[in-house]
Length: 294
Image (tube, rainbow, N blue to C red):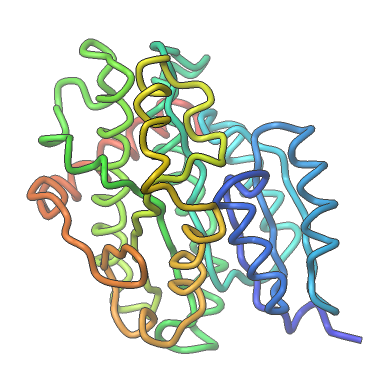
């Protein structure tokens, strides 16, 4: 019987549907232990059954229900993960989405920014001790943090430091591209901070994935636009291929701070290459998390 302590452990956000579920399933077929996070309790329960059915012998699938747009719920999820495992080999920050209107969370954050970036910022910081355990025993590249961004980050000219969450200047698409730029900048800051510890951080671009919950809450104009992209759309499994490769393959474990599409280095915007912006975003994100009491 497989010793659960010997299994490689992946924490996957947004694992109840779409790319996250496809990535979780692929890792389970390779014998991993996957701790998935999902926002909807019903989808989490259904996904857990599906993932367990797909798992290879000895692999283990489990789900935690958590809303990453809420810092208190994110902190609670991090405590649950820490209580369940003594190591993390890979953290996949995949959960995300776009809303049709401005929604402020009870903690005072804009929901798109909070759910796509700020929750992952807090979750990553809380789970770093478990990633460090893996890095210390496994060497450089053994522990990895992978972020799912978007080609949409190219449409954001930069973070407005007077309106970081685009609350005063809100529009659905702009809020989303702003958050996706934040994903790349956060990855850049992580790679720099963790370079001496052997923990790898990369971001990736999944492509157009229509068979997911990504745009199910978007404004109608965006849903209509996305519906015109069927000729370039990929399945969640196709998009997850690069995500799983980044999590498991030898090559991406030998570098850090990359941005990938279809297993290849892809271009990022000028705004995403701004190291000063990456550092400031880290500081501003710390302040927002502290304001929420997390």
